[in-house]
Length: 123
Image 1 (cartoon, rainbow, N blue to C red):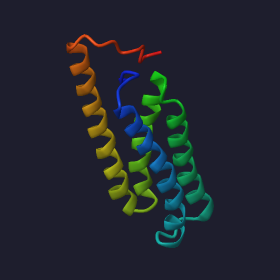
Image 2 (cartoon, one colour):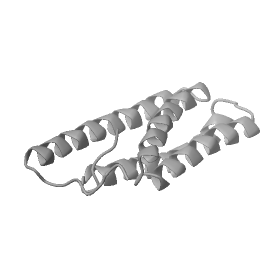
Image 3 (cartoon, rainbow, N blue to C red):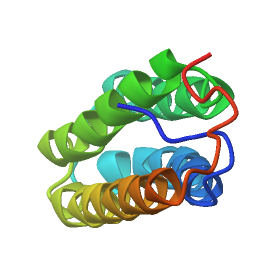
Image 4 (cartoon, helix red, strand yellow):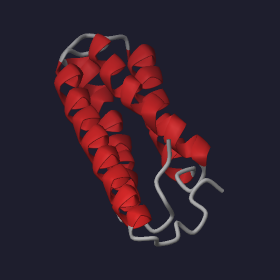
């Protein structure tokens, strides 16, 4: 469920999470002005998803960070309930996350087959 410490895809996953923080924050005014979601609810949904993505980014050195990252992807899709455009944007983030994670796993497998150490990825 994690990538090795030397895997360059960890940086890409972290970047995805940081971009999600920004996009989730920008989704709040879209929910308010385009989808007529009440201000408090929109701020709670978008802010909560942004905080989840920020927490995942901060925890990416640990196994729990990957779990929170996967939950963030679910939250990205769930924001589509507040405004339908987030189904598309959230779906794009999910696709990016899954592709990056799969490619990272392939890199780990290739490094393992060459006998390279993983530097304690699951610490």
